[in-house]
Image (cartoon, rainbow, N blue to C red):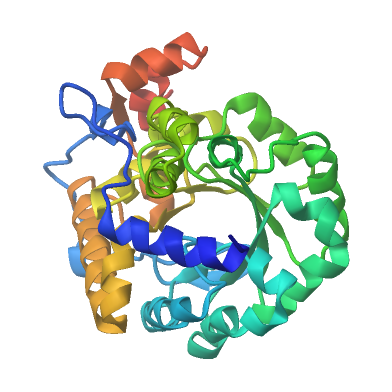
Length: 368
């Protein structure tokens, strides 16, 4: 199967099947957001109509701290989907990432499925996307082609070794990736975002990514699309018993998004992706330390219908974020980032076992 064929198969499976990380037996989401509580302010003393959601990211001003996270491209049938997503990003004044550009680097005839994003969003923050496993193969020249293809403002290097481990055709040689990332960060013409794709990033790797020169980290935590789950369905279709078994066993493998935000918040901006469905999830992520949030799977079905449906879905998320800011007394995204949160349940246990002092979050605003 070609890279292009896999791209359309992945997209259709995300629409037709339940590919999200499974909830735990108590019905709580794997992302950990159900363990996070914002502290209600009964006297917010602000005007909800005067909130400022603007934020700056890698030199670009966004009207809200929201990105349409990397999803698709690389097959002719994905062009309309990327057009709808990009049109929504332009209309709302937010950012957008494209899916892996590997297929178009290998076959320039597929570039149109990616170029449409810049065509439809001439003023938006757009970031490209290439896998860490392909860095040495494509080299800086190949990555610069990916940048030019969409007029990218940044380039994401994705880490998807969980998915690669399940795929029988997966690239499981992860040696030298950090050195390759460091080289790209030094030589590429645009800033580099290093992103996971559903299994999260732990603190030591976040430090290594930061020291390698990355401009931002996308935690891509457990809680959203399970690429082990996607590969489970692919294995079912081709009768691959071993890959199906591995996919089911590792369906919920990874660091929950809420915990991964805390693990990865160091000195460079953090993007929270992985199970972000609502504006409340966005507000919790920012209170935990994220600068922006990325939404992916909830937008796939709307994007297949058209730009208006994507705008409507994201507009709801932004309105939910405004309500959460108002009810916590936060006028700006910066104030939301300094607002108190309470961490409970498995997320509290996870972080404390990892050496993080969860109680400090509730006291951030009131330290003397």
